[in-house]
Image (cartoon, rainbow, N blue to C red):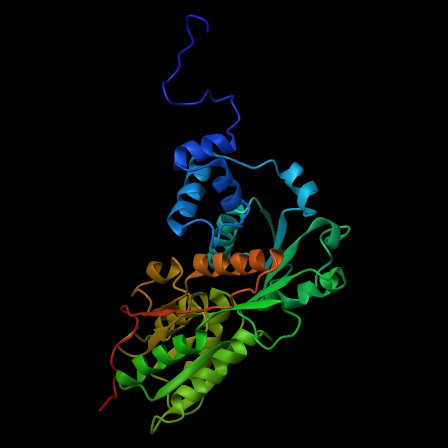
Length: 349
């Protein structure tokens, strides 16, 4: 060491490669335990607490296994494809964050592939998907983008999709139907009986489910008038759909139940442009709980969807399938978040 070089006790030089021995020392376990955990073969052999200690140490030390050697040994590319709609909102960015976190713990990389135009078919992004990928995770909203990948015969985990879809190896869902029930109970408890559903104009299982759930949740509430107005994604689209709903013949709705927060933001603009007030004249609700829900004024009542946990669960399901285990297919709970955009209906008894 030259006279102007310094060394901090207990720290490895920045140029030194972190090894599994370093991870084992930091986690207080053996190298064999590190291998089991990072190879995702620890269940039943290592305690959950020790497994988490190994993963944490690996992340903090920036440890990356020798993937080239492992791939040759295991016959894998250690790469998963995540297919989502075009990244126009933060929701799928957060899904990716969760999926990538679990993938990294297993020594996998994640290729993010937004479907062009949000939905619809897309070309195979690889010369040979079967040779390039180990598996696919996909949102039902981007299901048509999977068409070119069918012949690759890869494990497929679907997110927010029909659990009876035989194309999927496993399905991970959010409890959207319960979220809709929570929203409708909230609105009817406030005395709303004229409710218009601003329904996403997308041919997708999740939005068909939302439409059915709204209808079923309100059919046993006496005196309810439910209408449905299709809306494309986007603030402007939400504005135009809400304007059409609020100016349609017949009694004006007292609440707009929107299929996502972005449509709801447009609905709030439409209410104000008509000289009305949110929530005194019209209550507005969304779904997702994006950052946008706190940016609008008043802040938006919405259903919080656990996006990162959603991505984590999808990746765990794929890892289980690749390891030859049955994949868990959880339905993740959602949560109603009440804020200032909803209030008692003006004509409530």
